[in-house]
Length: 311
Image (cartoon, rainbow, N blue to C red; front, side):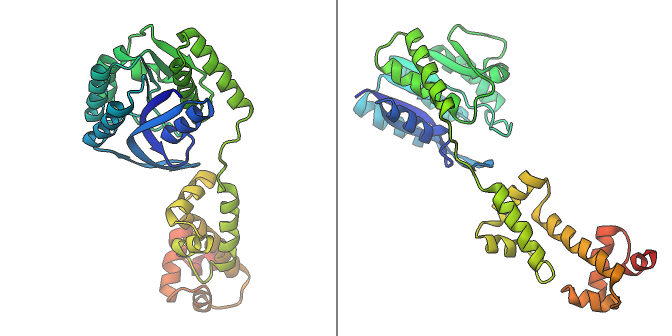
């Protein structure tokens, strides 16, 4: 069984990174070995945070594998620090694998820049000359290649869903490990990619469903509770995730949505109810009439009394 060392980040959503590499390499009959450079905190909504592992930890992972197994093929992905780059370049120069495939991680699916300019410049100088093939999207080519266009570049489709460019690079690494010529390995990776696109069933998050459930619960409980944490607990998710979902679906924070629902109800109450403003304030859970007035004016620009008179 052919071994391939993949050096890249960890994707907790498994759509890309180490997890996707292992799945692709294993599916094609190879044996994946790994060294993690960064740990991402992500799901179907995208990357929320990144922790770059210390370079000495990355080096230890690489040396443990290379000294023992000596894989002839190396696939490289996420590199975010100069120190980690130096470790990888040093390992490639020392151990001289037969082929090195580089799939740069430049932008997140949300368009956030993941590769600092200084690191990209050093990659051009130090890493690209050591690679058998560099796989890039044309829209990202300038960020990783600068003004140069070396011969060892392969451009992939701009419209590929998250992780499929990663799968192409991993498939290519497997075919190269089978001693196929580069052009034949590229053709094999293309065929694998087309099969993946045809059968793609990516992980689907529950954003829309969760958002609708949130709206339903807000309608039921906004009089008694306006705390975002309360609604997150009702939905059994973190308040951070609830905020991400709300912003993705509606462009608004959960707090704004709750306050909007409350304000609409208060407008209606002031327009049709015969209760006093103080009675309305207490009925809606405000600690005092002054508290109610402050909230309502902030939301509408009018005091409850002025709004009622307008109606």
